[in-house]
Image 1 (spheres, rainbow, N blue to C red):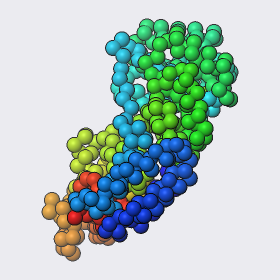
Image 2 (image 1 turned 90 degrees about the vertical axis):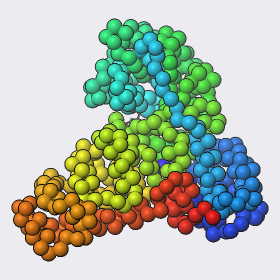
Image 3 (image 1 turned 180 degrees about the horizontal axis):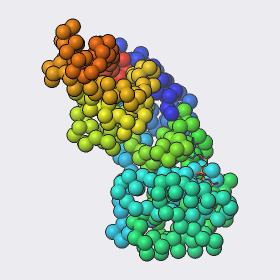
Image 4 (image 1 turned 60 degrees about the horizontal axis):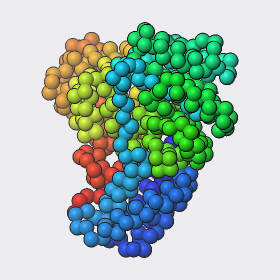
Length: 447
Ligand SMILES: Nc1nc2c(ncn2[C@@H]2O[C@H](COP(=O)(O)OP(=O)(O)OP(=O)(O)O)[C@@H](O)[C@H]2O)c(=O)[nH]1
Ligand SMILES: [Mg+2]
């Protein structure tokens, strides 16, 4: 997602970064380009205009600041304003003091309510909660069955019965209390377009269960229409936040960039695929860095955290970025790797990783051989594999029960990997502007 917008903005920054001083004409030209880029990304016209206006006001001050060069400042301003239109802060989930915390799902037909309800239940599970799903879509005969299949997949109970949507929801709530589930997610029926009957039904369900959160699921691929839909839902049914589904199919990102400004409601979660785990909390700051092409180091750390201890994860990510990665770290990572899920997913979030590396695959026996070889090395050799000469190689091969050729291959592969990581990580250290500049391929430095 946001591919084109990121490219366009990257192009704009590239052009201005060489300028020592921005004239009013430079600023105007740049803003016109940014505006076009936003409109091409299907961002709401009003939103694009106010975005550009805010950048303009701040960009004018740029010419008098001494601390940073104009290019750096503009990138910083655009980043901050992107974070702001994406909603600023991440949406916070709080839990009811009297469980269960009730969540109501609403949205048009096919927007992704049922799938998102299950994904959300799975997310609550990952937060240590015990969710329950309620199938209150009795419009479509297969709807409850679809929810049951998803529920079984994630090990979350699904409540439904052949009555009416309001009774099902009310009885579902009673059942959750009875069996001690602390989060209740109610899936409702959608219609092809906004209509009164649908609104009445959802409103009645809402009255019956008094939800703590009402999430409107909108299909990101519908672009600006998604925003219009959100607006009319919010008028009838006060919504807490939006769940943007199908962001994977939306290369432009207009809906994500417009929702908050147009309806004043944040995006709480984003769904990025049909699979259950293709679902994440929406973090405006991280999304802005993705748009600006900085990769998403924070998300990487979070994913690694699922497997590693927190400190270890931060240390590993930092080492990875700084290129100070030893064979000991490599061994640690190899052992955790299988648990971390596909390596391609992890590497995909780092900026500038070559395709070959994203497709890396590490079979079991290779892992064993590698492990044995590294174990036969001295600590010094693990830290600085370049000292491993002929006699050391023979010793290591003998100690690990492998061939000298195996040792050679590992040392060679590792030093290539180290080089590549140094290249990737170089200039990405530290925080803020140096990051932005480096990510954009510019040698920007504070003056
Ligand atoms: N690619 C992609 N497909 C999705 C995503 N979320 C949902 N889908 C697909 O979209 C289709 C509709 O999803 P549902 O969850 O059934 O939508 P719904 O809003 O419950 O639909 P109704 O109950 O008919 O109103 C299904 O085929 C889903 O697999 C997503 O994030 N990415
Ligand atoms: Mg459904």
